[in-house]
Image 1: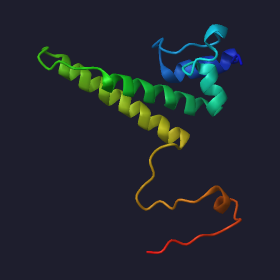
Image 2: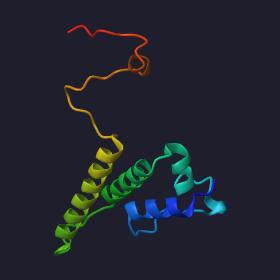
Image 3: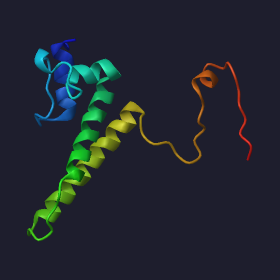
Length: 121
């Protein structure tokens, strides 16, 4: 499914200028990395952006790093920090971040007030 131009512009604004994601290309529509596939899966601009930033952080952390190269450690740590901040930012916006230790976890049925459960302590 092709995305509307304004939706693509909004997503591009959130994910930045890196061209590691394709959009509106029928040849890559079945690719799991296309914006159309992500949009079909999540249906929310913030969740699509969160997925892209998580992917970028994972790809960055998988790359090898040679500490013998002078000055690159600072640049790499700054990029790592920036990527983590972006992931945290979109986790808060999409409400998809990790929950606290005291968070109450409920099932979908509990949310709809159909059932209640108690946990033995």
